[in-house]
Length: 181
Image (cartoon, rainbow, N blue to C red):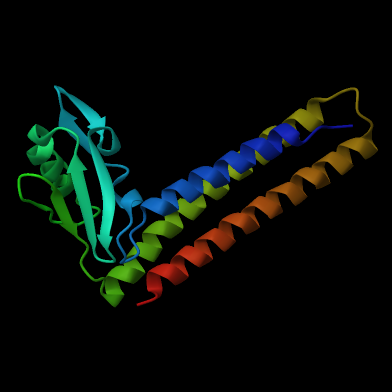
């Protein structure tokens, strides 16, 4: 019998990566994961924001970034401002960086959904690649009968459909959240 556990694990990994990408997508409400991709120049090298500061939600439209070392406050504000995809304008008071999250227009919401849909396609391509690798392994397995190969291919196809459906459900929930005012 052909074992699909490894393929399931790889597809599950693709779905998890997709979920992580969706966390970074802006929805109009403040969320600490919005800043997870920010790299700050501190101590002579670029470091992830979560290694130089603590990010909390002040309220639904405000993120508060508290640096571990107050000397990095300017570098943190500059790094957040430099990420054009987020379009945020932080301000600092010497102790913390406040990042107001502006309200999204209808046009901007639709643009964010379009951008997020490209991540859907990337995740589905990753799943299709796993399926293709599994199919090649099935075809090249000489110790399997034709019936077992056919069953294994059907099992891989069912697995692919299951994980594509998970991605579609995740994207639908995220796009509904983005479009909700």
